[in-house]
Amino acid sequence: MSQAQNAQTKLEELRQSALAKMQGAASSKDLYEVKVEFLGKNGFLTEIMKEMASLPKEEKPLFGKLVNEVKQALEQSYQQAELKLKAHEIEEKMANEEMDLTLPAVGGGNQGSEHPVAKVTDEIVRIMSRLGYSLRQGPWIEKDFYNFEALNIPANHPARDMQDTFFIDPTHVLRTHTSPIQIHSMESERPPLRILGTGAVFRCDSDISHLPHFHQIEGMCVDRHVSMADLKGTVSFFVREFFGAGLKTRFRPSFFPFTEPSAEIDCTCPICKGKGCSLCKSSGWIEIGGCGLINPKVFGFTGVQYPEWQGFAFGFGIERMAIIKYGVEDIRLFVENNLKFNQQFE
Ligand code: PHE
Image 1 (cartoon, rainbow, N blue to C red):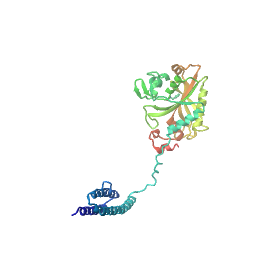
Image 2 (cartoon, rainbow, N blue to C red):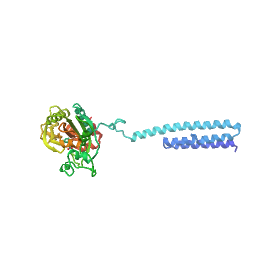
Image 3 (cartoon, protein in one colour):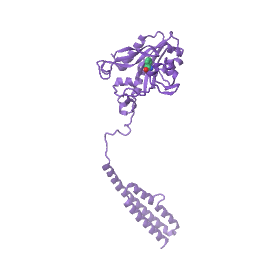
Image 4 (cartoon, rainbow, N blue to C red):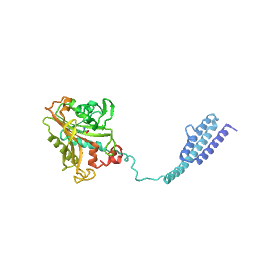
């Protein structure tokens, strides 16, 4: 057999085997692999073209033509087979896949929303800024001095039991309240002061109305001639702006080591407007926080001169404010990060 005949036979074998493989391809992916195998850059057809170099000159044109014909034929069969397989694949997909029209749209489904704690914080800051208050923050890990000592809660004092403390080491704690921010502010700024301290606080406590990690916001005013009446006026203004016009505020005598006198703050239950409901346990009143005039002993720890300067402070739990305002039934919802829960506060 001449070299040319030999090459032609090879070409014919190639064509037959490529066609058979294309017919037999079970999927468009398999079919594509066959195409690469025969028609690809390093495929069999390219391989056989290289043999042309060693053919006698006069036989080259004919052989080249044959190779081109085979190439075209294979390309055509590939396209036909591909059409058929793809159509079949789409049909199969349609038959087997169900479309769930209730699924959120691509791109729109996971849109986040502001967390209610952030939203309530912003709202309180906005209201109090109208009275000249501005925001301060402090560290989560506090020296015993800032969380207790300087707030007139000495070591071994029973008042420490009011707050179940997480200790980092014997002299550092996860802050149990935002009141240490009062001390930082009095140390680093000069009165008159109107500040809001806010952020996360930590207590070893967990049930339907307590989280070990929650948030507080508190206001502090240090100025000349500050009285209980100023405190009451400030808190009443806040209650009406935050919970609704017409709601009343009342103070009940209480105790905090850092304020003297101290009071618990109640307001008309915003849910039932004082008529009595499950949230206010039928009393018509709901407790929202604590307050008092700054204890002169606290000034003593900071260098602020009393009685030239006097002050008051009041503090709220942010999750509790959201619970009361929006009627949330379980405080643990605030830490579940369920988008549907968060979106209700938009
Ligand atoms: N720090 C107090 C607490 O966490 C709340 C409070 C703040 C009371 C400011 C009085 C004044 O219980």
